[in-house]
Image (cartoon, rainbow, N blue to C red; front, side):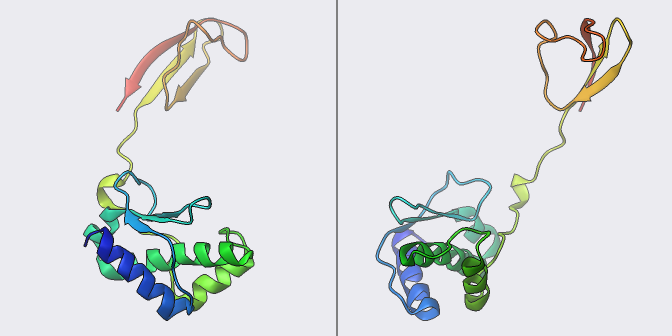
Length: 153
């Protein structure tokens, strides 16, 4: 599926599910990583993650398009278009859009490193997911010098 076919699909879904026309652009955006789609408040365009079509098929893509069209139509109507709004939740349920998109298998978090640090003064040990510069920081308990002990993968 290309951008033109996505545009036609979006216009069709908008007329069939919402009874309203979609008058802006819908296109694939391969830079989207953690979301299935995105509605732009300023341009009213809809970006769709092409990997969701690739991994889950057209049925999942239509649910994502319906989700973004809920944002689109509610925003243009001046009603609650955010995820937390009652109008959005009711319309999404009515048209059968997905509340959350599925996780793409290759985007799942990889095992993170754990860094172990120790205070030289009070011997307090702690772990962090992110490294930090031990020259810039001191122990929160006793203001002693911190040293890195080891890193686990």
